[in-house]
Image 1 (cartoon, one colour):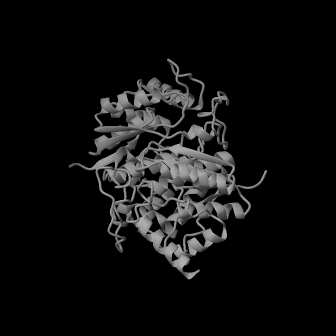
Image 2 (cartoon, chains in turn green, blue):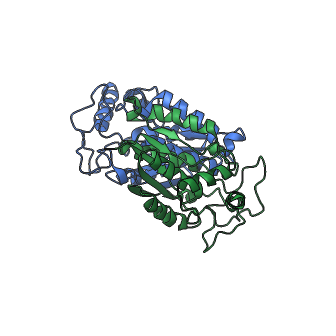
Image 3 (tube, chains in turn red, brown):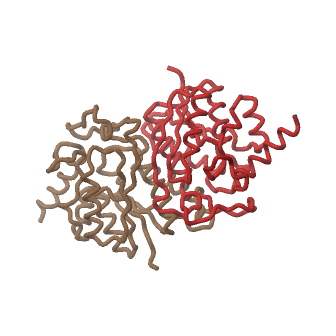
Length: 218
Length: 218
């Protein structure tokens, strides 16, 4: 049996690239995606489609209703999504309380049950929206927790949390995606779920700018 | 508005006592329980009933299917529950991979959305079943993660993780429960979900021994 990795897949550019990286590094990839109360299910369909195209071996979709107590414009339909660009030093209303902490906890549960050696994450601390749970020190604290929390932690084989894009610019991520044949135009990063990306939310803005820059240089 | 605390409530003796402690300390208590693929839903009914009796203000039941990938005799019906007593230095098959890590992550999400100052947990490192995620160093690592992970963490008001029974013996917990008028005979600690507790699983054994000891001294 080959070495296994759990990859958190949102259907977006970053996590799809991360899945391609894990596959290239020789892992058998188990995809994990969440129906957490986000505005649309489009990202789940796309995550599954991309997983199949890249050749992952299994894909779990887990329900966890973080919209039950609201607190974010991504899950609370009574709040408006911000459309006027990323503001420096401000955590935007799209931040979902505890989302990454919950997703990684569930990934640890899956990794432990499947004896996976690694958990790959698409978090990024450069061209991102200012979420606190995307920072390197957050990842380090989570690894420390994982080392203490699990049965396999005690037995000395805790899954390693790997965020291969954490220090990359969005332009660098696009270049890696191209090199790895990630179906970039199929990936979905938009916070909305329409036919076409809105082009106005933070996620669209950051992505579109990088794609334009890379493609204009060709 | 009074100060708020999220309390993880399983319907068992320990977490019910912890809810009573949080209420006594003046918190408005938000209960949180999980339908996670455990063998029976009895503990959820009981957790809600006890919450009402104690006077908590809100109770969330969250679905998170940790049985999706098995790995524990508590969630995988093809495995047998151990019935021959707790073995020293061994993690039993009832350990659910990542369970406490997942539950606490969801509690953090709820606490942040509701501006709760504290999260109360019934974990115990003395008379317990040998689960790695009940140890004080695990709790400390989680607090460290919480401090880094959240929006309110950045703003300086991270919820505090409080495990008031962590160093207590089961006998000491029973005494606290009695002093706080916890409806002990209503609480349900058994891993099975029959009409009466089985009396044979680890959880029943530890509880019954303590109850017997305290009641025989009266």
